Length: 326
Image (cartoon, rainbow, N blue to C red; front, top):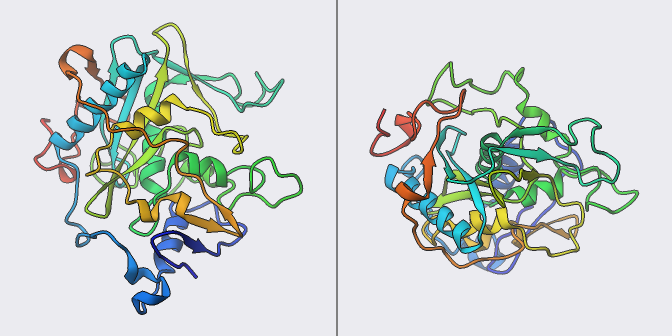
Protein backbone atom coordinates (compact mmCIF):
# COMPACT_ATOMS: atom_id res chain seq x y z
CA UNK A 1 0.00 0.00 0.00
CA UNK A 2 1.25 3.46 -0.90
CA UNK A 3 0.02 6.23 1.38
CA UNK A 4 0.35 9.93 0.64
CA UNK A 5 0.36 12.85 3.00
CA UNK A 6 2.28 16.08 3.27
CA UNK A 7 4.99 14.53 5.42
CA UNK A 8 5.72 11.02 4.28
CA UNK A 9 4.87 8.49 1.59
CA UNK A 10 5.13 4.88 2.69
CA UNK A 11 5.40 1.98 0.25
CA UNK A 12 5.83 -1.74 0.75
CA UNK A 13 8.11 -2.91 -2.07
CA UNK A 14 9.09 -6.39 -3.17
CA UNK A 15 12.64 -7.49 -2.40
CA UNK A 16 13.51 -8.08 -6.02
CA UNK A 17 12.12 -6.75 -9.27
CA UNK A 18 12.68 -8.15 -12.75
CA UNK A 19 15.52 -6.62 -14.71
CA UNK A 20 13.59 -6.50 -17.98
CA UNK A 21 11.65 -3.32 -17.21
CA UNK A 22 13.55 -0.19 -16.25
CA UNK A 23 10.42 1.64 -15.21
CA UNK A 24 8.73 -1.10 -13.16
CA UNK A 25 9.26 0.65 -9.83
CA UNK A 26 7.59 3.80 -11.10
CA UNK A 27 4.67 1.73 -12.36
CA UNK A 28 4.39 0.01 -8.99
CA UNK A 29 4.30 3.29 -7.11
CA UNK A 30 1.74 4.78 -9.48
CA UNK A 31 -0.58 1.79 -9.33
CA UNK A 32 -0.65 1.48 -5.55
CA UNK A 33 -2.12 4.89 -4.80
CA UNK A 34 -5.77 3.89 -4.56
CA UNK A 35 -8.65 6.19 -3.86
CA UNK A 36 -10.46 7.06 -0.70
CA UNK A 37 -11.09 10.12 1.36
CA UNK A 38 -8.58 12.82 2.18
CA UNK A 39 -8.32 11.84 5.85
CA UNK A 40 -6.54 8.53 5.20
CA UNK A 41 -3.44 10.00 3.52
CA UNK A 42 -4.31 8.41 0.17
CA UNK A 43 -3.59 9.65 -3.34
CA UNK A 44 -6.47 12.12 -3.08
CA UNK A 45 -4.44 14.19 -0.62
CA UNK A 46 -1.77 15.23 -3.15
CA UNK A 47 -1.17 18.91 -2.62
CA UNK A 48 -0.10 19.90 -6.13
CA UNK A 49 -1.83 20.26 -9.47
CA UNK A 50 -1.54 17.38 -11.95
CA UNK A 51 -2.25 18.31 -15.55
CA UNK A 52 -4.18 15.90 -17.80
CA UNK A 53 -2.05 13.11 -19.23
CA UNK A 54 -0.35 13.99 -22.51
CA UNK A 55 -0.70 17.76 -22.20
CA UNK A 56 2.78 18.60 -20.88
CA UNK A 57 6.12 18.64 -22.72
CA UNK A 58 9.37 20.58 -22.86
CA UNK A 59 9.60 23.44 -25.33
CA UNK A 60 12.79 24.72 -26.92
CA UNK A 61 12.62 27.72 -24.59
CA UNK A 62 12.26 25.39 -21.60
CA UNK A 63 15.35 23.44 -22.62
CA UNK A 64 17.38 26.59 -23.20
CA UNK A 65 16.38 27.93 -19.79
CA UNK A 66 17.32 24.73 -17.97
CA UNK A 67 20.66 24.47 -19.76
CA UNK A 68 21.38 28.15 -19.16
CA UNK A 69 20.76 27.79 -15.45
CA UNK A 70 22.95 24.69 -15.29
CA UNK A 71 25.78 26.58 -16.95
CA UNK A 72 25.43 29.45 -14.48
CA UNK A 73 25.32 26.99 -11.58
CA UNK A 74 28.60 25.46 -12.77
CA UNK A 75 30.15 28.91 -13.07
CA UNK A 76 29.01 29.75 -9.53
CA UNK A 77 30.89 26.65 -8.32
CA UNK A 78 33.99 27.19 -10.48
CA UNK A 79 33.60 23.96 -12.42
CA UNK A 80 33.07 23.01 -16.04
CA UNK A 81 30.02 20.98 -17.02
CA UNK A 82 28.51 18.64 -19.58
CA UNK A 83 24.72 18.94 -19.45
CA UNK A 84 22.10 16.69 -21.03
CA UNK A 85 18.33 17.14 -21.19
CA UNK A 86 16.00 14.36 -22.33
CA UNK A 87 12.27 14.01 -22.71
CA UNK A 88 10.05 11.56 -20.84
CA UNK A 89 10.92 8.57 -23.05
CA UNK A 90 14.65 9.20 -23.34
CA UNK A 91 14.86 11.23 -26.53
CA UNK A 92 17.88 13.51 -26.11
CA UNK A 93 16.70 17.08 -26.55
CA UNK A 94 20.01 18.82 -25.94
CA UNK A 95 23.61 18.26 -24.86
CA UNK A 96 25.70 21.28 -23.94
CA UNK A 97 29.33 21.54 -22.85
CA UNK A 98 30.98 24.56 -21.31
CA UNK A 99 34.14 25.75 -23.07
CA UNK A 100 36.65 23.85 -20.93
CA UNK A 101 34.53 20.84 -19.98
CA UNK A 102 36.41 17.55 -19.95
CA UNK A 103 35.43 15.45 -22.98
CA UNK A 104 35.82 12.23 -20.99
CA UNK A 105 34.73 10.73 -17.69
CA UNK A 106 36.24 7.84 -15.72
CA UNK A 107 34.06 5.07 -14.33
CA UNK A 108 34.87 3.95 -10.79
CA UNK A 109 33.10 1.69 -8.30
CA UNK A 110 34.75 3.40 -5.37
CA UNK A 111 36.18 0.08 -4.16
CA UNK A 112 39.81 -0.09 -3.11
CA UNK A 113 41.97 -2.04 -5.54
CA UNK A 114 39.19 -2.38 -8.14
CA UNK A 115 40.80 -0.19 -10.80
CA UNK A 116 41.31 -2.21 -13.96
CA UNK A 117 38.77 -4.84 -12.97
CA UNK A 118 35.53 -4.95 -14.91
CA UNK A 119 34.62 -1.42 -15.93
CA UNK A 120 36.63 0.22 -13.16
CA UNK A 121 38.94 2.78 -14.71
CA UNK A 122 37.16 2.73 -18.08
CA UNK A 123 37.09 6.11 -19.79
CA UNK A 124 33.83 7.10 -21.51
CA UNK A 125 32.59 10.29 -23.19
CA UNK A 126 31.18 12.77 -20.70
CA UNK A 127 28.20 13.28 -22.99
CA UNK A 128 27.12 9.66 -22.60
CA UNK A 129 27.44 9.83 -18.82
CA UNK A 130 25.28 12.97 -18.68
CA UNK A 131 22.64 11.40 -20.96
CA UNK A 132 22.46 8.28 -18.79
CA UNK A 133 21.88 10.39 -15.69
CA UNK A 134 19.12 12.39 -17.37
CA UNK A 135 17.35 9.27 -18.63
CA UNK A 136 17.53 7.73 -15.16
CA UNK A 137 15.74 10.70 -13.61
CA UNK A 138 13.05 10.55 -16.29
CA UNK A 139 12.52 6.78 -16.30
CA UNK A 140 12.39 6.18 -12.54
CA UNK A 141 9.87 8.95 -11.83
CA UNK A 142 6.13 9.42 -12.22
CA UNK A 143 3.26 11.51 -10.94
CA UNK A 144 3.39 9.41 -7.77
CA UNK A 145 7.14 9.41 -7.09
CA UNK A 146 10.20 11.46 -8.00
CA UNK A 147 13.47 9.53 -8.00
CA UNK A 148 16.92 10.93 -8.80
CA UNK A 149 20.07 9.07 -9.80
CA UNK A 150 21.04 9.27 -6.10
CA UNK A 151 17.86 7.33 -5.34
CA UNK A 152 18.91 4.84 -8.00
CA UNK A 153 22.30 4.45 -6.31
CA UNK A 154 20.54 3.48 -3.10
CA UNK A 155 18.30 0.80 -4.64
CA UNK A 156 20.50 -0.88 -7.28
CA UNK A 157 23.41 -1.96 -5.10
CA UNK A 158 24.24 -5.38 -3.65
CA UNK A 159 22.57 -4.62 -0.33
CA UNK A 160 19.69 -2.44 0.84
CA UNK A 161 20.72 -0.24 2.50
CA UNK A 162 24.13 0.08 0.78
CA UNK A 163 26.91 -0.98 3.09
CA UNK A 164 24.72 -3.05 5.40
CA UNK A 165 26.10 -6.59 5.55
CA UNK A 166 23.86 -9.64 5.27
CA UNK A 167 20.99 -7.65 3.79
CA UNK A 168 19.04 -8.49 0.64
CA UNK A 169 19.85 -6.71 -2.60
CA UNK A 170 18.30 -3.37 -3.46
CA UNK A 171 14.74 -3.34 -4.86
CA UNK A 172 16.11 -2.60 -8.34
CA UNK A 173 19.36 -4.55 -8.14
CA UNK A 174 20.37 -5.46 -11.69
CA UNK A 175 17.96 -3.09 -13.42
CA UNK A 176 20.90 -1.58 -15.31
CA UNK A 177 20.84 -4.62 -17.58
CA UNK A 178 17.45 -3.57 -18.94
CA UNK A 179 19.39 -0.99 -20.96
CA UNK A 180 21.60 -3.42 -22.88
CA UNK A 181 21.62 -2.95 -26.68
CA UNK A 182 20.01 -6.37 -27.13
CA UNK A 183 16.88 -5.34 -25.21
CA UNK A 184 13.72 -5.71 -27.27
CA UNK A 185 12.06 -2.89 -25.31
CA UNK A 186 14.22 0.01 -26.46
CA UNK A 187 13.96 1.96 -29.71
CA UNK A 188 17.21 2.91 -31.46
CA UNK A 189 17.74 6.49 -32.63
CA UNK A 190 18.32 5.13 -36.14
CA UNK A 191 14.88 3.50 -36.00
CA UNK A 192 13.12 6.67 -34.87
CA UNK A 193 14.41 10.03 -33.55
CA UNK A 194 11.14 10.62 -31.69
CA UNK A 195 9.66 7.35 -30.45
CA UNK A 196 10.81 5.74 -27.21
CA UNK A 197 11.85 4.37 -24.88
CA UNK A 198 15.44 5.15 -25.80
CA UNK A 199 18.36 3.26 -24.27
CA UNK A 200 20.57 4.95 -21.69
CA UNK A 201 24.07 4.67 -23.23
CA UNK A 202 25.72 3.56 -19.97
CA UNK A 203 22.64 1.92 -18.52
CA UNK A 204 20.57 3.48 -15.76
CA UNK A 205 22.88 5.63 -13.67
CA UNK A 206 23.69 5.35 -9.97
CA UNK A 207 25.87 8.47 -10.02
CA UNK A 208 24.27 11.51 -8.31
CA UNK A 209 23.55 14.37 -10.70
CA UNK A 210 20.45 13.16 -12.52
CA UNK A 211 16.95 14.49 -11.78
CA UNK A 212 13.48 14.25 -13.28
CA UNK A 213 11.97 17.37 -14.82
CA UNK A 214 8.32 18.14 -14.04
CA UNK A 215 5.72 20.51 -15.47
CA UNK A 216 2.38 20.85 -13.73
CA UNK A 217 2.79 17.59 -11.85
CA UNK A 218 3.81 15.51 -14.89
CA UNK A 219 7.25 14.09 -15.66
CA UNK A 220 8.38 15.66 -18.94
CA UNK A 221 12.05 14.69 -18.99
CA UNK A 222 15.29 14.54 -17.10
CA UNK A 223 18.54 16.46 -16.61
CA UNK A 224 21.98 14.94 -16.15
CA UNK A 225 25.25 16.69 -15.35
CA UNK A 226 28.91 15.69 -15.27
CA UNK A 227 31.31 18.31 -13.88
CA UNK A 228 35.08 18.57 -14.16
CA UNK A 229 37.77 20.92 -12.94
CA UNK A 230 39.03 21.62 -16.45
CA UNK A 231 39.39 20.12 -19.91
CA UNK A 232 42.37 17.98 -18.86
CA UNK A 233 40.78 16.47 -15.74
CA UNK A 234 38.25 13.72 -16.36
CA UNK A 235 34.90 13.78 -14.67
CA UNK A 236 34.01 10.91 -12.33
CA UNK A 237 31.15 8.46 -12.89
CA UNK A 238 30.50 6.40 -9.78
CA UNK A 239 27.89 5.64 -7.10
CA UNK A 240 27.30 6.47 -3.46
CA UNK A 241 28.45 3.55 -1.30
CA UNK A 242 28.35 5.50 1.97
CA UNK A 243 24.88 6.97 2.31
CA UNK A 244 25.53 7.93 5.94
CA UNK A 245 27.97 10.63 4.84
CA UNK A 246 26.18 13.69 3.47
CA UNK A 247 28.83 14.95 1.08
CA UNK A 248 28.52 17.84 -1.36
CA UNK A 249 28.26 16.50 -4.89
CA UNK A 250 28.90 19.15 -7.54
CA UNK A 251 27.17 17.20 -10.32
CA UNK A 252 24.07 17.01 -8.15
CA UNK A 253 24.17 20.65 -7.08
CA UNK A 254 24.53 21.93 -10.64
CA UNK A 255 21.74 19.72 -11.95
CA UNK A 256 19.34 20.64 -9.15
CA UNK A 257 20.15 24.37 -9.33
CA UNK A 258 19.30 24.27 -13.05
CA UNK A 259 15.66 23.56 -12.28
CA UNK A 260 13.42 26.45 -11.33
CA UNK A 261 10.32 25.77 -9.25
CA UNK A 262 8.42 25.30 -12.51
CA UNK A 263 10.51 22.23 -13.32
CA UNK A 264 11.37 20.79 -9.89
CA UNK A 265 9.68 17.65 -8.62
CA UNK A 266 6.85 18.36 -6.17
CA UNK A 267 8.26 18.07 -2.67
CA UNK A 268 5.48 15.73 -1.54
CA UNK A 269 6.54 12.93 -3.89
CA UNK A 270 10.32 13.27 -3.76
CA UNK A 271 12.19 10.12 -2.79
CA UNK A 272 13.00 11.42 0.69
CA UNK A 273 9.26 11.31 1.45
CA UNK A 274 9.08 7.61 0.62
CA UNK A 275 10.04 4.62 2.73
CA UNK A 276 10.50 0.95 1.84
CA UNK A 277 10.88 -1.70 4.52
CA UNK A 278 11.28 1.02 7.11
CA UNK A 279 14.13 2.67 5.16
CA UNK A 280 13.86 6.18 3.74
CA UNK A 281 14.97 6.80 0.18
CA UNK A 282 17.32 9.63 -0.75
CA UNK A 283 16.68 12.34 -3.33
CA UNK A 284 19.47 14.91 -3.00
CA UNK A 285 22.12 15.74 -0.41
CA UNK A 286 21.34 19.42 -0.79
CA UNK A 287 18.64 21.69 -2.16
CA UNK A 288 20.51 24.56 -3.82
CA UNK A 289 18.93 27.85 -4.77
CA UNK A 290 17.83 28.19 -8.37
CA UNK A 291 20.72 29.49 -10.43
CA UNK A 292 20.60 32.53 -12.67
CA UNK A 293 20.83 32.26 -16.45
CA UNK A 294 24.16 32.30 -18.27
CA UNK A 295 24.78 33.48 -21.83
CA UNK A 296 24.87 30.20 -23.76
CA UNK A 297 26.41 31.86 -26.81
CA UNK A 298 29.63 32.65 -24.95
CA UNK A 299 29.86 29.98 -22.24
CA UNK A 300 30.23 26.92 -24.49
CA UNK A 301 28.21 25.17 -27.16
CA UNK A 302 25.51 22.63 -27.86
CA UNK A 303 26.95 19.46 -29.31
CA UNK A 304 25.71 16.45 -31.24
CA UNK A 305 26.10 12.91 -29.91
CA UNK A 306 26.25 10.11 -32.47
CA UNK A 307 23.31 7.78 -32.04
CA UNK A 308 21.45 10.15 -29.76
CA UNK A 309 21.18 13.58 -31.37
CA UNK A 310 21.45 14.85 -34.93
CA UNK A 311 21.31 18.62 -34.30
CA UNK A 312 22.26 20.97 -31.49
CA UNK A 313 18.69 20.70 -30.28
CA UNK A 314 17.58 17.19 -31.17
CA UNK A 315 14.98 16.60 -33.86
CA UNK A 316 12.55 15.10 -31.36
CA UNK A 317 9.90 17.29 -32.96
CA UNK A 318 6.97 15.34 -31.59
CA UNK A 319 8.24 15.90 -28.09
CA UNK A 320 9.01 19.62 -28.26
CA UNK A 321 6.75 22.61 -28.78
CA UNK A 322 7.60 24.51 -30.87
CA UNK A 323 9.61 21.90 -32.82
CA UNK A 324 13.38 21.94 -32.57
CA UNK A 325 15.11 23.59 -35.57
CA UNK A 326 15.92 20.52 -37.69
